[in-house]
Image (cartoon, rainbow, N blue to C red; front, top):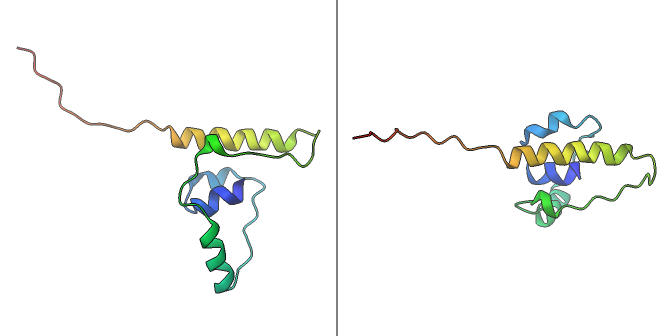
Length: 89
């Protein structure tokens, strides 16, 4: 999940929270082109699916939960809207 998120959003600040993330190896131009062709432009965190290969230790699920929580917080950050207050007459 981390790799998929960072492939789509390589400048994501969440990368610093990914304790177990390993940078991918350098690829040839042909492989880079193939990866670019299958990498989505946008990801909706609510549509991501996680499969826990450990099936029981729950460590993977805890890490995934923390990542999902960080992604959701980034997606839902409030927008700062500046405006002048209306004058009361």
